[in-house]
Each structure stands twice: as structure tokens, then as C-alpha cells.
Length: 290
Image (tube, rainbow, N blue to C red; front, side, top):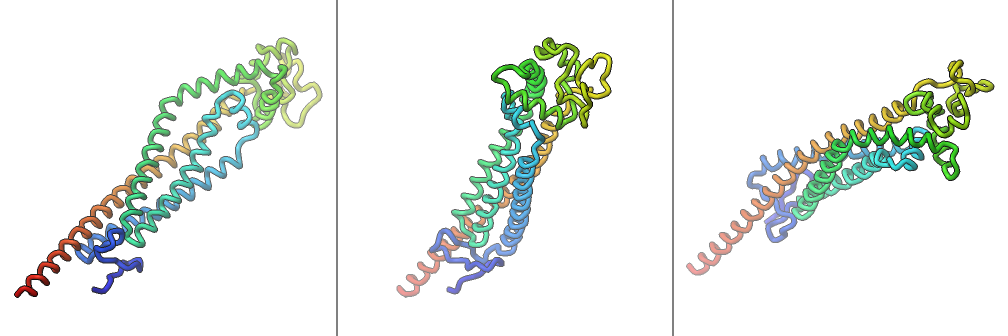
């Protein structure tokens, strides 16, 4: 018996090879599902590459001072979003590549592995999104209190890195204090430097004594606090990550559906082919006996 060929050019083996079995029975329906699987898997690969690229872009274009600040204040959960995008992008591209390999050779083992990998990835992504939404409000409150507490450690011994991060943040975002520049007056640093804010609160370019006597002259400093800008920057990144996550989950569900259908179809065709071989065997023996 000669081998049949799929639309992707791969030979379809007989039932003797359990890893590559597709018969002509139900060929039209099978090819339609196979084509749909190819399209959605291709979209899955494209989205995975986009997510990976965006995660790398976010990592490269981090706002100055944010990385150091969130690490020093124990809020590194915000930065894990970029790592999450990069990991998801890599896993998505690898998964879709495995799917293409299984589809090309109609390999049951590879398609099953692809489906299991998608199910694990889907479960992980759902868990991360749910946990992030549950603790979102808690994290935002922690962000507000942690920044105010950080101001009290400004210029203290052994807090040089935190001091530098706060200065970079205030310059980068164009802000001063937590909620307002007046927050500095209530800090330990403010008690030691009466009616003064750090030099990093000054508008660029610096004016001489721009951070002095601020109760009477605020025209040379930033008036708005940094908490709003930091929160906006970090939360917007999380929203973008969540948006990508939703689209990936939708594509994963569709790919899982089509891969399961392919598995069922291949197993069904494999079973039918074996039954056909048994019938041929009995027919040959029967006619020999005749």
C-alpha cells in the first residue's frame, strides 16, 4: 500500500507506526481542523514573539530609579511583571514550535506533549493573574506607605543607595516628596534642615538656593508628590501585562481545543486502520482456507 500525503507534505504512515497515523477516512473534516490548528498556532507564535519583545523593551526602558527603589523597599513584585512577560513569550514561542512539528508529521506523541505544555502554561498564567488582582489593592497601599517610610531614611547612615534612588526618582518623574513637597518637612531629614527640601526637588536647571525657604517660595521646586507618578508608571505596566495575558489565554484555549480534537481524530483513525488490517488478515486467511 502506498503512503498518502498531508497538505503539509509529510507522508501519512500506516497503523504500524503509532506515532504517524492518519488515514483518508474523514479527510475533509480532519484537514479543516488541521488548517484551523495551523492558523491559531501561527497567531499564538506571533503573539508570543510580540510579548517577548515587549517584555524586553520594558526591561530596557525602565524609568530611572524605579528598579533600585522597588528592590530596596521590598516591592520587587512590580518588576516581576516584565520577567513574567519574557518567560511567557519564550514558552509561547517554544510551545507553538512544538505544535508545528507535531502537525507537520501528524505525530501523536508530540501533539499530546504540546497539549500538556499548553495546559500547564494556561494554569500558571491564570494563577498569576488571579493572585495579582487579589493583592492589587494591598500592594498599592504598601507602595504608598513604603515611599513615605523611605523618605524618613533619606541621607541616614547605611541608606546611601536608597537616598540615591529617591534623588533619581524625583529628578526622573519631576516630583517631590510622597504626596506633596510638604512631606519632606515632616521627615527626619526635614527636622535637621529647616524649611528645606532635597536638591533633587529643584526644577531644572538649578537655581541657587532653590531648595531653601520653601514656605515662602515654591517657584523653584516640584510641588507634586512622587507616589502618584510611581504608582501610575507601575500600575500601567501591570495593566498592559494583564491585557497581553488575556489574549494569550484566549489563544491557548483555542489551540488546546483544536489539539485535543486532533488527538481524538488521530486515535480514531489509528483504531479504524487497525480494524481494517485485522479484517484484511481474516479475509486473506478465510480465502486461503477456501
